[in-house]
Structures are given as C-alpha cells and as structure tokens.
Image 1 (cartoon, rainbow, N blue to C red):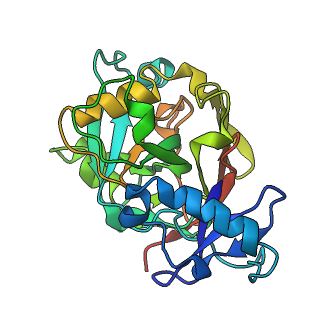
Image 2: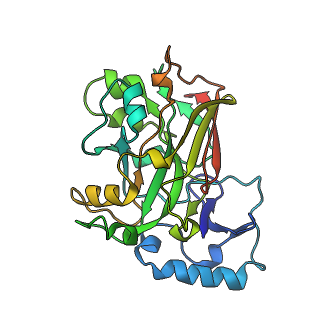
Length: 286
C-alpha cells in the first residue's frame, strides 16, 4: 500500500495511491498517518479493507494537488552518516566501523515537491538522495532478526545539508541538517509488501538542473536496514512514525572537484525505484 498526505501545509489530509497511480482521499477512514496510526499494525489491514470497499466512491486527488510528507510530523528523524563506502571516500573519510548517528529537526520536514529554502548566510547547501525507513511498532533493544517486524514502510528522502554549518561551525552535524525545508519526504510511504524482494537492491538517482549527480543503488549500503533499526534501538526507543534515513551514495556537491552547491533557481530531482520521485526548486530565504 502507498500512503500519501495532501493539501496545504499544516492541514494535510490522509490519502492512498492505488496500484494504477490514482490517488484517493482517505479522510473517511478517520485516521491520519501519525504515531497512533502506525503503532497498531491492524490499522494497515483495516485501511486496506476500507480502500477495497470505498476506492471507487471517495473523491480523487488530482495531480495538481500539493503532497505533504506522507508521515504526519514524526517524533524524531535519525540519520545515518557515511553509510556508503564510496561516499565516505569522496568526503576524505574512512568508512565507519559502526553507524554514525545524528538527528535532524522535525521542523525541517516538508512535502516532496515543496521549494528548498536556502538558509540565510548559506553558501554550501548540498543534496543527498536517501532511502528512509518509517518505524511501525515501538522498537527498544530489538535484534536484527526482530527488526523487520518494527518497520511500517519506506519513503524517499532528500537529506539536504548546509556543509559550512555542518562542518565548519563547530559542534555537531545537526545544525547543518535541520534548516527549514531540509527534509522533503515522499511522494508516498510504501509498506513493506510493496517490496517482495526487499529494499537492498533499489536503483537510486539525483539530478541537479537535469544533470545526473548521484546514480547508485541501495545494494551499496554498508549497514543494511534491519541492522540499522536494531542498532539505533540499542541507544533509544524508536517510536511509531519515527524516521531513519539510511545515508547517501556518492555524488554530493561537496565531493565534486571543485565543490558545487545549490543556488536560488536550481532544480533538484531525485528518485528511488519503488518509492517514486520528487522535485525541489531552490529559493533564497525571504
């Protein structure tokens, strides 16, 4: 199943994208796609049954309608750094022996095609296509074997970064990762049944102004999804709706020679097989 949320920022409604690409309004189901919804796996089964009955009678969502994040504001966004060995090398660092964890403020969340707002004082805003995992059942000290049962689904994420804020301003990475609009999610959340062969061999790509910058596959992850869910759960409880973004492959602006960063007017397009695509146009901070 593919879950969407649509409408104006802050008042999004829940919806579903059907197998043929039709998007329908699921407000009549009576739940938003939030922590309470993901906490109970039976909710997905009940939603599927509701869709089977009501898909032809409920309003459709036109292609012109804005999509928001398919997850109503999560409790936390956890990111994994340097989780592709070739990306680590392009940044001049060794691949990590354990996952590198950092947080991204939930206020950075936005829709998949919303504008990217380049923050004030920024000269090094960068792109990162990533596979993100959405937690279903609460996970605390779970094993790698237990981890898949705690996953509600997967979503496309562009983990935008301001490299000077992240690296040159001291402290932790979070302040270079958390600017407003730096976490576009979507277009939809795909539940695990959408991936009968798993999510560890999905082509992924990102273009800037039509030119390919990242072209890789989730097959190149250093630490795979079940390991990451288990690992993170050793340090904090993962709650329903929480997001883990699993890292980016090579091709970021910081790794280019010379480095290239985004400026107002630039267009970033990205996608992962099975998770759709998104598009953000950069603009200066008002």
